[in-house]
Image (cartoon, rainbow, N blue to C red; front, side, top):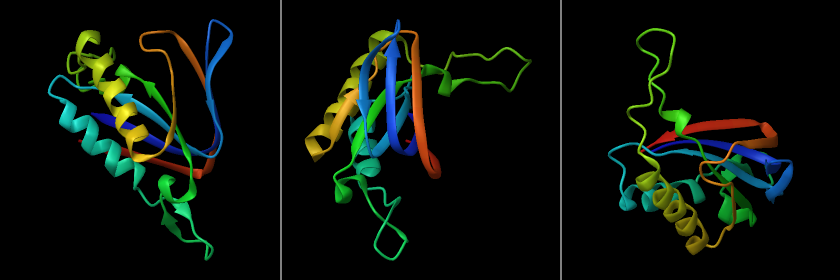
Length: 145
């Protein structure tokens, strides 16, 4: 899995002009599922991200996690994170898992975040989505597992 973690003050997803998910202070998580990813990968990365210390403490140091601050997570599937651009100018997506494998793993990832205590909203798998956010910092981190 390849996940882009963005610390946000707010984020939302629209499909066909209708808002389907939104969060306030927390994490926007763009999730790409690869061919070799498993349920164990989803659960392990959820734990790592929920405990990732990227929020500021009282001293202004990045020392708190989304769990520590009572933050939320917006999980958005994004197979294009698995793009291979090493040959030519047209990306190849052969490393991305097919929808039948990816959709349940994205759901498992979101479920594992919920199990840890985060409020989780989700985009719509396979839909053409408009994602808007206010990146806080900005803080953006790429995590692979």
